[in-house]
Image (cartoon, rainbow, N blue to C red; front, side, top):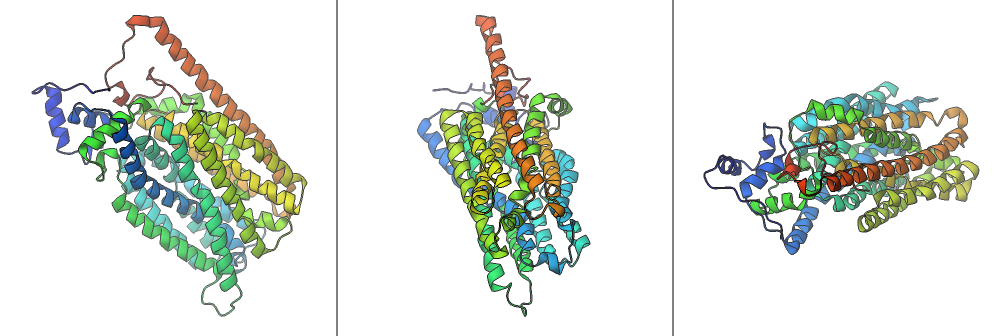
Length: 513
């Protein structure tokens, strides 16, 4: 059994540990720039590892953390796609949209997200993570509810821009939460679970919008239009969850009220081999610069950018695209829901396989192949075959979960991790800004140019995944050779895992594949 080194009584280290124990609720406020995990290790002293205790601890973490991050991610997706449900429940007529104006209402969300992404890099480290997220969630819920009061194109643009700014913190924050709470081996499956909430939202949103359209759409005397009810309900629900998140979600394992002090120390030992601790709130310019010059940052970013150019087929243009296959508006509300079901099966199934085989990128590539076939079907067929192709495109998000999981486990250094995640989110926003513009009004109802571009993009992002795996293999092999060449002279620094080093600085770091 592994055991941490005991601190000599009366030593400077022991005195520091005693002081730290007095304020374990906020140990991440270290001013030295080291990781908060080191304070817990020093304060607790030796920790005895026990597989049964760790298994119970993991179950406890799952029960407290996963429901919270899943619920918020579910709302993040359904709130973003609510504009699509509005498009077939009266929004276009009520706000007098015409031509490509709806495209810009869809795109402006991502301009807001893009504008606020760089400030988010600093704010996520400056403020307690969960509290910062909770404030953002509450704001976006309030803004979504305000969309129900929009009367014209300009007011829709303004609200959607603010909505995007409020959601800018979600993906970077979720990457950090995952790396704080789970080991490398556990991360891929957990990312698959919370990201599968997109599929759940796709299903729930379609049925919810269909119910609203049936019960409100035909009532000319209704006080509110169908699209207004959708925005009000989802917005108020999100604001309520945001307030709850403020009081329930811990900022990090160091401040988790549901963990005892010995459980916190055991958790730190459990994730020690992640080689990245639980985070530091000190911004480090050298890590920021490293993130910008590391080729992996841009391989991640390319996948996210390219894969999100076709994203409108599942979000703002999903219902319109299905209508173009030969179905009615109401039918489209129901027919988009199997896309969500397939996405859930693909995400949870493939990430589970990735966890069991330790082969994330191979599992991801396997999920992309049916999506390529589906894109070809959408471009070359109509009605049922095209609809099947539409559903098969639900396998592409496995790539997004893989990228998020790799950013959690393969990017070390607090500042570098946040920077890489934010660059990825910027790529995501740019891809989504472009996405609605590929569906030009002049190409309706088949939108053939957009569908052809989807086939090409799905092929390119699959090649990108193969390149990522080659880079990781090459780096791991080089570090293993360095270790072998030094032989018996090779020594490992005590607690090097908690020095807040980057994956390039820490030569003990090995990349997950």
